[in-house]
Length: 533
Image (cartoon, rainbow, N blue to C red; front, top):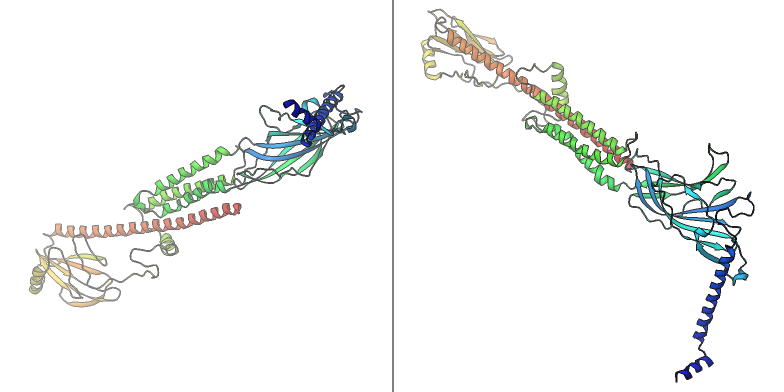
Protein backbone atom coordinates (compact mmCIF):
# COMPACT_ATOMS: atom_id res chain seq x y z
CA UNK A 1 0.00 0.00 0.00
CA UNK A 2 2.76 2.44 0.91
CA UNK A 3 4.70 1.54 -2.22
CA UNK A 4 1.67 2.35 -4.36
CA UNK A 5 1.27 5.78 -2.74
CA UNK A 6 4.95 6.55 -3.31
CA UNK A 7 4.72 5.61 -6.96
CA UNK A 8 1.69 7.87 -7.44
CA UNK A 9 3.61 10.77 -5.89
CA UNK A 10 6.56 10.21 -8.21
CA UNK A 11 4.25 10.04 -11.25
CA UNK A 12 2.42 13.25 -10.34
CA UNK A 13 4.56 15.28 -7.80
CA UNK A 14 2.84 18.28 -6.10
CA UNK A 15 3.90 21.84 -6.95
CA UNK A 16 5.22 22.59 -3.41
CA UNK A 17 7.46 19.59 -3.46
CA UNK A 18 8.93 20.63 -6.79
CA UNK A 19 9.66 24.19 -5.66
CA UNK A 20 11.31 23.03 -2.45
CA UNK A 21 13.45 20.55 -4.38
CA UNK A 22 14.55 23.26 -6.83
CA UNK A 23 15.43 25.72 -4.04
CA UNK A 24 17.49 23.14 -2.20
CA UNK A 25 19.26 22.24 -5.41
CA UNK A 26 20.02 25.92 -6.17
CA UNK A 27 21.28 26.55 -2.64
CA UNK A 28 23.49 23.57 -2.87
CA UNK A 29 24.72 24.84 -6.19
CA UNK A 30 25.45 28.35 -4.76
CA UNK A 31 27.19 26.88 -1.79
CA UNK A 32 29.35 24.81 -4.07
CA UNK A 33 30.17 27.86 -6.18
CA UNK A 34 30.86 29.96 -3.08
CA UNK A 35 33.27 27.31 -1.80
CA UNK A 36 34.92 27.25 -5.23
CA UNK A 37 35.06 31.07 -5.24
CA UNK A 38 36.70 31.17 -1.85
CA UNK A 39 39.33 28.67 -2.91
CA UNK A 40 40.00 30.51 -6.14
CA UNK A 41 40.35 33.90 -4.46
CA UNK A 42 42.81 32.88 -1.79
CA UNK A 43 45.00 30.48 -3.77
CA UNK A 44 47.84 32.95 -4.20
CA UNK A 45 46.61 35.66 -1.76
CA UNK A 46 48.41 37.04 1.29
CA UNK A 47 47.05 39.47 3.85
CA UNK A 48 50.50 40.79 4.75
CA UNK A 49 50.93 43.13 1.77
CA UNK A 50 48.97 46.05 0.49
CA UNK A 51 46.47 44.82 -2.14
CA UNK A 52 47.66 46.98 -5.04
CA UNK A 53 48.91 45.89 -8.43
CA UNK A 54 51.64 48.54 -8.41
CA UNK A 55 53.47 49.40 -5.19
CA UNK A 56 53.44 53.06 -6.16
CA UNK A 57 49.67 53.16 -6.17
CA UNK A 58 47.82 54.67 -3.23
CA UNK A 59 45.07 52.68 -1.59
CA UNK A 60 42.10 54.85 -0.56
CA UNK A 61 40.26 54.04 2.63
CA UNK A 62 36.89 55.64 3.44
CA UNK A 63 36.13 55.98 7.13
CA UNK A 64 32.73 56.44 8.73
CA UNK A 65 31.98 56.64 12.47
CA UNK A 66 28.61 56.05 14.13
CA UNK A 67 28.31 57.20 17.73
CA UNK A 68 26.15 54.76 19.64
CA UNK A 69 26.62 55.71 23.30
CA UNK A 70 28.67 57.81 25.71
CA UNK A 71 29.57 55.40 28.46
CA UNK A 72 31.53 57.64 30.80
CA UNK A 73 33.26 60.99 31.08
CA UNK A 74 35.96 60.93 33.73
CA UNK A 75 36.75 64.59 34.35
CA UNK A 76 39.35 63.85 37.00
CA UNK A 77 41.42 61.55 34.74
CA UNK A 78 40.29 63.31 31.54
CA UNK A 79 39.18 60.14 29.77
CA UNK A 80 36.13 59.77 27.52
CA UNK A 81 34.67 56.28 27.07
CA UNK A 82 32.43 55.83 24.01
CA UNK A 83 30.79 53.00 22.11
CA UNK A 84 31.38 53.40 18.35
CA UNK A 85 30.56 51.60 15.14
CA UNK A 86 33.50 51.96 12.79
CA UNK A 87 33.07 51.31 9.05
CA UNK A 88 36.06 51.09 6.71
CA UNK A 89 35.73 50.68 2.95
CA UNK A 90 38.58 50.05 0.48
CA UNK A 91 39.30 48.18 -2.77
CA UNK A 92 41.39 45.01 -2.96
CA UNK A 93 42.86 44.47 -6.42
CA UNK A 94 43.28 40.70 -5.85
CA UNK A 95 39.77 39.92 -4.64
CA UNK A 96 37.71 40.36 -7.80
CA UNK A 97 35.73 37.83 -9.83
CA UNK A 98 33.20 37.49 -12.62
CA UNK A 99 29.71 36.86 -11.31
CA UNK A 100 28.68 34.70 -14.25
CA UNK A 101 31.46 32.23 -13.55
CA UNK A 102 30.16 31.55 -10.06
CA UNK A 103 26.45 31.28 -10.60
CA UNK A 104 25.83 35.04 -10.14
CA UNK A 105 27.39 35.29 -6.67
CA UNK A 106 27.77 39.02 -6.04
CA UNK A 107 29.12 39.21 -2.48
CA UNK A 108 30.64 36.90 0.08
CA UNK A 109 31.21 37.31 3.82
CA UNK A 110 34.33 35.91 5.33
CA UNK A 111 36.32 36.50 8.54
CA UNK A 112 38.24 39.75 8.48
CA UNK A 113 41.46 37.99 9.37
CA UNK A 114 41.57 36.41 5.88
CA UNK A 115 42.08 39.72 4.07
CA UNK A 116 44.43 42.67 4.35
CA UNK A 117 43.08 45.33 6.73
CA UNK A 118 44.14 48.97 7.18
CA UNK A 119 46.09 49.55 10.37
CA UNK A 120 43.87 52.49 11.40
CA UNK A 121 44.08 53.17 15.11
CA UNK A 122 42.85 55.81 17.54
CA UNK A 123 45.79 58.14 18.04
CA UNK A 124 44.63 59.53 21.40
CA UNK A 125 43.79 56.15 22.84
CA UNK A 126 43.84 56.10 26.66
CA UNK A 127 43.05 52.43 27.26
CA UNK A 128 45.41 50.73 29.70
CA UNK A 129 45.27 47.35 27.96
CA UNK A 130 44.97 48.58 24.34
CA UNK A 131 42.16 46.10 23.80
CA UNK A 132 41.31 45.61 20.15
CA UNK A 133 37.86 45.77 18.70
CA UNK A 134 35.59 42.80 18.10
CA UNK A 135 36.60 40.48 15.25
CA UNK A 136 33.81 40.66 12.69
CA UNK A 137 33.37 39.51 9.10
CA UNK A 138 34.08 41.58 6.03
CA UNK A 139 31.79 41.89 3.03
CA UNK A 140 33.59 41.44 -0.33
CA UNK A 141 31.95 42.49 -3.59
CA UNK A 142 32.80 41.09 -6.99
CA UNK A 143 34.57 44.31 -8.02
CA UNK A 144 37.01 44.07 -5.09
CA UNK A 145 35.28 46.49 -2.70
CA UNK A 146 35.66 45.43 0.93
CA UNK A 147 33.46 46.83 3.69
CA UNK A 148 34.44 46.14 7.27
CA UNK A 149 32.02 47.10 10.07
CA UNK A 150 33.20 46.61 13.62
CA UNK A 151 31.92 47.81 17.00
CA UNK A 152 34.47 49.22 19.43
CA UNK A 153 34.53 50.62 22.95
CA UNK A 154 37.15 53.34 22.92
CA UNK A 155 38.81 55.26 25.72
CA UNK A 156 40.22 58.52 24.43
CA UNK A 157 42.04 61.31 26.20
CA UNK A 158 40.05 64.51 26.36
CA UNK A 159 41.20 67.91 27.56
CA UNK A 160 38.54 68.85 30.10
CA UNK A 161 37.99 72.50 30.96
CA UNK A 162 35.97 72.75 34.19
CA UNK A 163 36.13 76.53 34.54
CA UNK A 164 32.34 76.81 34.28
CA UNK A 165 31.36 73.59 36.03
CA UNK A 166 28.51 72.62 36.31
CA UNK A 167 27.48 74.79 33.34
CA UNK A 168 30.41 73.77 31.16
CA UNK A 169 30.69 72.46 27.60
CA UNK A 170 33.46 70.10 26.47
CA UNK A 171 35.06 69.34 23.13
CA UNK A 172 36.61 65.88 22.90
CA UNK A 173 38.57 64.86 19.83
CA UNK A 174 38.87 61.34 18.39
CA UNK A 175 41.69 61.16 15.84
CA UNK A 176 41.92 58.11 13.54
CA UNK A 177 44.83 57.41 11.24
CA UNK A 178 47.21 54.77 9.94
CA UNK A 179 50.05 53.85 12.27
CA UNK A 180 52.60 52.76 9.65
CA UNK A 181 51.37 53.82 6.21
CA UNK A 182 52.01 57.39 5.15
CA UNK A 183 49.97 59.48 2.77
CA UNK A 184 51.86 58.14 -0.28
CA UNK A 185 50.78 54.60 0.53
CA UNK A 186 47.32 54.96 2.04
CA UNK A 187 44.97 57.89 2.02
CA UNK A 188 41.94 58.51 4.27
CA UNK A 189 38.64 60.05 3.22
CA UNK A 190 35.48 61.06 5.06
CA UNK A 191 32.33 59.19 4.22
CA UNK A 192 30.26 62.00 5.81
CA UNK A 193 30.97 65.48 7.06
CA UNK A 194 30.17 64.37 10.59
CA UNK A 195 29.62 61.23 12.58
CA UNK A 196 26.30 59.44 12.27
CA UNK A 197 24.09 60.15 15.33
CA UNK A 198 20.93 58.40 14.13
CA UNK A 199 21.32 55.49 16.55
CA UNK A 200 22.72 57.47 19.47
CA UNK A 201 21.43 56.57 22.94
CA UNK A 202 20.82 59.74 24.96
CA UNK A 203 23.09 60.26 27.94
CA UNK A 204 21.65 61.40 31.27
CA UNK A 205 24.56 63.72 32.04
CA UNK A 206 25.77 64.96 28.67
CA UNK A 207 23.94 66.44 25.70
CA UNK A 208 25.56 65.82 22.30
CA UNK A 209 25.43 68.93 20.12
CA UNK A 210 27.31 67.52 17.15
CA UNK A 211 30.33 65.54 16.00
CA UNK A 212 31.88 67.08 12.89
CA UNK A 213 34.70 65.39 11.02
CA UNK A 214 37.79 67.00 9.54
CA UNK A 215 40.69 65.57 7.54
CA UNK A 216 44.20 66.67 8.50
CA UNK A 217 47.57 66.06 6.86
CA UNK A 218 50.39 66.35 9.37
CA UNK A 219 54.12 66.29 8.92
CA UNK A 220 55.70 64.79 12.03
CA UNK A 221 59.23 65.55 13.13
CA UNK A 222 60.34 61.95 12.77
CA UNK A 223 59.42 61.59 9.12
CA UNK A 224 59.29 63.72 6.00
CA UNK A 225 56.24 61.96 4.56
CA UNK A 226 52.76 63.31 5.27
CA UNK A 227 50.43 61.34 7.50
CA UNK A 228 46.71 61.93 6.94
CA UNK A 229 44.19 61.52 9.73
CA UNK A 230 40.51 62.16 10.35
CA UNK A 231 39.55 63.99 13.55
CA UNK A 232 36.04 63.80 14.94
CA UNK A 233 35.24 66.58 17.43
CA UNK A 234 32.52 65.61 19.88
CA UNK A 235 30.69 68.66 21.26
CA UNK A 236 29.20 67.96 24.68
CA UNK A 237 27.16 70.12 27.01
CA UNK A 238 26.61 69.10 30.61
CA UNK A 239 23.09 68.68 31.93
CA UNK A 240 23.33 70.74 35.12
CA UNK A 241 20.03 69.84 36.81
CA UNK A 242 21.62 67.22 39.04
CA UNK A 243 24.30 69.58 40.29
CA UNK A 244 21.87 72.48 40.74
CA UNK A 245 19.61 70.52 43.06
CA UNK A 246 22.34 68.64 44.93
CA UNK A 247 25.24 71.09 45.18
CA UNK A 248 24.14 74.60 44.26
CA UNK A 249 20.75 75.12 45.93
CA UNK A 250 21.88 73.67 49.32
CA UNK A 251 24.90 75.97 49.20
CA UNK A 252 22.67 78.98 48.53
CA UNK A 253 20.37 78.08 51.40
CA UNK A 254 23.32 77.69 53.75
CA UNK A 255 24.81 80.96 52.53
CA UNK A 256 21.66 82.88 53.44
CA UNK A 257 22.05 81.64 57.02
CA UNK A 258 25.36 83.43 57.45
CA UNK A 259 23.97 87.03 57.54
CA UNK A 260 21.34 85.93 60.06
CA UNK A 261 24.15 85.53 62.58
CA UNK A 262 24.20 89.32 62.86
CA UNK A 263 20.50 89.29 63.77
CA UNK A 264 20.98 87.02 66.76
CA UNK A 265 21.07 88.82 70.12
CA UNK A 266 24.57 89.29 71.47
CA UNK A 267 23.59 87.77 74.81
CA UNK A 268 22.39 84.51 73.25
CA UNK A 269 25.92 83.14 72.85
CA UNK A 270 25.13 81.47 69.49
CA UNK A 271 26.41 84.07 67.05
CA UNK A 272 29.88 82.60 66.59
CA UNK A 273 28.57 79.01 66.72
CA UNK A 274 26.24 79.67 63.79
CA UNK A 275 29.05 81.06 61.63
CA UNK A 276 31.37 78.14 62.40
CA UNK A 277 28.61 75.60 61.66
CA UNK A 278 27.83 77.18 58.29
CA UNK A 279 31.53 77.27 57.45
CA UNK A 280 31.89 73.55 58.19
CA UNK A 281 28.85 72.71 56.04
CA UNK A 282 30.28 74.58 53.06
CA UNK A 283 33.62 72.85 53.56
CA UNK A 284 31.90 69.47 53.11
CA UNK A 285 30.34 70.61 49.81
CA UNK A 286 33.69 71.98 48.69
CA UNK A 287 35.31 68.58 49.29
CA UNK A 288 32.60 66.84 47.25
CA UNK A 289 33.30 69.09 44.28
CA UNK A 290 37.09 68.80 44.64
CA UNK A 291 36.94 64.99 44.53
CA UNK A 292 35.34 64.92 41.09
CA UNK A 293 37.36 67.73 39.51
CA UNK A 294 40.87 67.39 38.05
CA UNK A 295 43.63 68.99 40.14
CA UNK A 296 44.25 71.79 37.66
CA UNK A 297 44.73 75.52 37.88
CA UNK A 298 41.25 76.13 36.48
CA UNK A 299 38.97 76.47 39.47
CA UNK A 300 35.37 75.52 38.61
CA UNK A 301 32.62 78.10 38.81
CA UNK A 302 30.87 76.36 41.68
CA UNK A 303 34.21 76.12 43.48
CA UNK A 304 34.66 79.87 43.13
CA UNK A 305 31.16 80.34 44.55
CA UNK A 306 32.01 78.12 47.51
CA UNK A 307 35.29 79.93 48.15
CA UNK A 308 33.61 83.35 47.94
CA UNK A 309 30.85 82.20 50.31
CA UNK A 310 33.33 80.70 52.77
CA UNK A 311 35.37 83.90 52.69
CA UNK A 312 32.23 85.92 53.37
CA UNK A 313 31.26 83.66 56.27
CA UNK A 314 34.77 83.88 57.71
CA UNK A 315 34.60 87.67 57.51
CA UNK A 316 31.15 87.68 59.12
CA UNK A 317 32.38 85.51 61.98
CA UNK A 318 35.35 87.80 62.57
CA UNK A 319 33.09 90.86 62.50
CA UNK A 320 30.71 89.15 64.90
CA UNK A 321 33.53 88.64 67.40
CA UNK A 322 34.52 92.30 67.04
CA UNK A 323 30.93 93.50 67.54
CA UNK A 324 30.47 91.25 70.58
CA UNK A 325 33.50 92.90 72.16
CA UNK A 326 31.86 96.28 71.60
CA UNK A 327 28.61 95.03 73.10
CA UNK A 328 30.31 93.67 76.22
CA UNK A 329 32.71 96.57 76.66
CA UNK A 330 32.13 96.80 80.43
CA UNK A 331 32.12 99.76 82.86
CA UNK A 332 35.72 100.70 82.08
CA UNK A 333 34.85 101.67 78.50
CA UNK A 334 35.45 105.19 77.26
CA UNK A 335 32.53 107.34 76.13
CA UNK A 336 31.34 106.95 72.57
CA UNK A 337 33.24 109.38 70.32
CA UNK A 338 31.34 112.32 68.91
CA UNK A 339 31.74 111.16 65.29
CA UNK A 340 30.45 107.68 66.15
CA UNK A 341 27.50 109.13 68.03
CA UNK A 342 26.68 111.41 65.13
CA UNK A 343 27.26 108.93 62.28
CA UNK A 344 26.28 105.57 63.81
CA UNK A 345 23.68 106.41 66.42
CA UNK A 346 21.89 109.02 64.34
CA UNK A 347 22.25 108.49 60.59
CA UNK A 348 23.19 104.82 60.30
CA UNK A 349 20.65 103.75 62.91
CA UNK A 350 17.84 105.32 60.90
CA UNK A 351 19.07 103.72 57.67
CA UNK A 352 19.22 100.27 59.31
CA UNK A 353 15.86 100.75 61.10
CA UNK A 354 17.34 100.45 64.59
CA UNK A 355 15.29 102.23 67.24
CA UNK A 356 15.27 102.34 71.01
CA UNK A 357 12.70 100.52 73.08
CA UNK A 358 9.32 102.21 72.76
CA UNK A 359 10.15 104.12 69.60
CA UNK A 360 8.21 103.52 66.44
CA UNK A 361 9.56 103.37 62.96
CA UNK A 362 7.40 106.28 61.83
CA UNK A 363 8.13 108.72 64.66
CA UNK A 364 11.26 110.80 65.06
CA UNK A 365 13.04 110.46 68.38
CA UNK A 366 13.03 113.63 70.50
CA UNK A 367 14.24 114.21 74.02
CA UNK A 368 11.24 114.65 76.31
CA UNK A 369 11.59 117.25 79.09
CA UNK A 370 11.38 116.00 82.63
CA UNK A 371 7.99 116.40 84.25
CA UNK A 372 7.53 118.60 87.23
CA UNK A 373 7.24 116.93 90.54
CA UNK A 374 9.48 113.96 89.77
CA UNK A 375 10.30 111.97 92.86
CA UNK A 376 13.86 111.87 94.12
CA UNK A 377 15.30 109.65 96.79
CA UNK A 378 18.67 109.36 98.39
CA UNK A 379 18.72 105.58 98.85
CA UNK A 380 20.48 104.80 95.56
CA UNK A 381 17.53 105.17 93.17
CA UNK A 382 16.35 108.25 91.36
CA UNK A 383 14.09 109.16 88.47
CA UNK A 384 14.14 112.25 86.34
CA UNK A 385 16.92 114.78 86.08
CA UNK A 386 20.24 114.98 87.80
CA UNK A 387 20.44 116.77 91.12
CA UNK A 388 23.22 118.30 93.13
CA UNK A 389 23.87 118.18 96.83
CA UNK A 390 25.13 121.28 98.58
CA UNK A 391 26.06 121.39 102.25
CA UNK A 392 26.85 124.55 104.11
CA UNK A 393 27.29 125.30 107.76
CA UNK A 394 25.17 127.74 109.76
CA UNK A 395 25.66 129.24 113.19
CA UNK A 396 24.03 127.99 116.33
CA UNK A 397 21.62 130.88 116.41
CA UNK A 398 20.42 130.18 112.92
CA UNK A 399 18.01 127.43 112.35
CA UNK A 400 14.82 126.35 110.83
CA UNK A 401 11.53 127.66 112.04
CA UNK A 402 9.54 125.59 114.44
CA UNK A 403 6.81 125.21 111.84
CA UNK A 404 9.14 123.67 109.33
CA UNK A 405 10.78 121.49 112.01
CA UNK A 406 7.44 120.04 113.03
CA UNK A 407 6.46 119.57 109.42
CA UNK A 408 9.69 117.77 108.65
CA UNK A 409 9.46 115.55 111.72
CA UNK A 410 5.94 114.52 110.77
CA UNK A 411 6.22 114.11 107.01
CA UNK A 412 9.85 113.40 106.13
CA UNK A 413 10.93 109.78 106.27
CA UNK A 414 14.55 108.58 106.50
CA UNK A 415 14.35 108.36 102.71
CA UNK A 416 14.17 112.01 101.64
CA UNK A 417 11.36 112.50 99.14
CA UNK A 418 10.35 116.03 98.09
CA UNK A 419 6.83 117.12 97.46
CA UNK A 420 5.23 118.19 94.19
CA UNK A 421 5.27 121.80 93.00
CA UNK A 422 7.68 124.65 93.25
CA UNK A 423 7.56 125.06 97.04
CA UNK A 424 10.66 124.99 99.23
CA UNK A 425 10.65 122.58 102.14
CA UNK A 426 13.10 122.41 105.01
CA UNK A 427 13.51 119.96 107.80
CA UNK A 428 15.53 119.36 110.93
CA UNK A 429 16.93 115.95 111.76
CA UNK A 430 19.47 115.53 114.53
CA UNK A 431 20.62 119.10 114.34
CA UNK A 432 20.67 119.12 110.53
CA UNK A 433 18.49 121.46 108.55
CA UNK A 434 17.64 120.11 105.07
CA UNK A 435 16.33 122.50 102.48
CA UNK A 436 14.90 120.93 99.30
CA UNK A 437 14.30 123.14 96.29
CA UNK A 438 12.19 122.11 93.29
CA UNK A 439 12.89 123.87 90.06
CA UNK A 440 11.82 123.55 86.44
CA UNK A 441 13.81 122.93 83.31
CA UNK A 442 15.29 125.62 81.11
CA UNK A 443 14.08 128.94 82.31
CA UNK A 444 11.73 127.89 85.09
CA UNK A 445 12.05 129.73 88.46
CA UNK A 446 12.86 128.06 91.74
CA UNK A 447 12.55 129.38 95.28
CA UNK A 448 15.50 128.90 97.49
CA UNK A 449 15.96 129.74 101.14
CA UNK A 450 18.96 131.85 101.93
CA UNK A 451 20.84 132.01 105.25
CA UNK A 452 18.79 135.01 106.39
CA UNK A 453 15.50 133.25 105.51
CA UNK A 454 14.64 135.63 102.64
CA UNK A 455 12.94 134.11 99.59
CA UNK A 456 14.12 134.93 96.04
CA UNK A 457 13.56 133.82 92.45
CA UNK A 458 16.27 132.65 90.08
CA UNK A 459 16.55 130.65 86.87
CA UNK A 460 17.67 127.02 87.46
CA UNK A 461 18.46 124.11 85.13
CA UNK A 462 18.87 121.50 87.84
CA UNK A 463 16.97 120.61 90.89
CA UNK A 464 19.01 121.04 93.98
CA UNK A 465 18.91 119.47 97.37
CA UNK A 466 20.34 121.95 99.85
CA UNK A 467 21.47 120.51 103.14
CA UNK A 468 22.25 123.02 105.85
CA UNK A 469 24.03 121.81 108.89
CA UNK A 470 23.92 123.60 112.19
CA UNK A 471 26.10 121.14 113.96
CA UNK A 472 28.63 120.51 111.24
CA UNK A 473 31.21 119.39 113.68
CA UNK A 474 29.07 116.52 115.01
CA UNK A 475 27.58 115.37 111.67
CA UNK A 476 30.64 115.02 109.43
CA UNK A 477 30.16 111.24 108.94
CA UNK A 478 26.55 111.59 107.88
CA UNK A 479 27.39 114.29 105.40
CA UNK A 480 30.25 112.30 103.89
CA UNK A 481 27.97 109.26 103.51
CA UNK A 482 25.30 111.28 101.80
CA UNK A 483 27.84 112.82 99.48
CA UNK A 484 29.34 109.37 98.70
CA UNK A 485 25.93 107.87 97.91
CA UNK A 486 25.10 110.77 95.63
CA UNK A 487 28.38 110.57 93.73
CA UNK A 488 28.14 106.78 93.41
CA UNK A 489 24.65 107.05 92.01
CA UNK A 490 25.78 109.64 89.47
CA UNK A 491 28.69 107.44 88.39
CA UNK A 492 26.42 104.43 88.10
CA UNK A 493 23.95 106.30 85.93
CA UNK A 494 26.77 107.62 83.75
CA UNK A 495 28.19 104.10 83.36
CA UNK A 496 24.79 102.68 82.44
CA UNK A 497 24.27 105.44 79.93
CA UNK A 498 27.71 104.85 78.44
CA UNK A 499 27.21 101.06 78.22
CA UNK A 500 23.80 101.60 76.64
CA UNK A 501 25.34 103.78 73.95
CA UNK A 502 28.01 101.16 73.15
CA UNK A 503 25.36 98.43 72.99
CA UNK A 504 23.35 100.50 70.57
CA UNK A 505 26.49 101.04 68.49
CA UNK A 506 26.98 97.26 68.39
CA UNK A 507 23.34 96.71 67.44
CA UNK A 508 23.53 99.24 64.61
CA UNK A 509 26.71 97.63 63.28
CA UNK A 510 25.03 94.20 63.43
CA UNK A 511 22.12 95.40 61.35
CA UNK A 512 24.38 97.23 58.89
CA UNK A 513 26.57 94.19 58.22
CA UNK A 514 23.52 91.94 58.04
CA UNK A 515 22.11 93.94 55.12
CA UNK A 516 25.51 94.18 53.46
CA UNK A 517 26.06 90.43 53.58
CA UNK A 518 22.50 89.70 52.44
CA UNK A 519 23.10 91.87 49.37
CA UNK A 520 26.42 90.11 48.70
CA UNK A 521 24.86 86.63 48.90
CA UNK A 522 21.98 87.73 46.69
CA UNK A 523 24.22 89.09 43.95
CA UNK A 524 26.54 86.06 44.05
CA UNK A 525 23.52 83.80 43.64
CA UNK A 526 22.27 85.88 40.72
CA UNK A 527 25.66 85.64 39.00
CA UNK A 528 25.88 81.88 39.21
CA UNK A 529 22.22 81.43 38.18
CA UNK A 530 22.88 83.74 35.23
CA UNK A 531 25.54 81.31 34.02
CA UNK A 532 22.94 78.54 34.10
CA UNK A 533 20.48 80.56 32.05
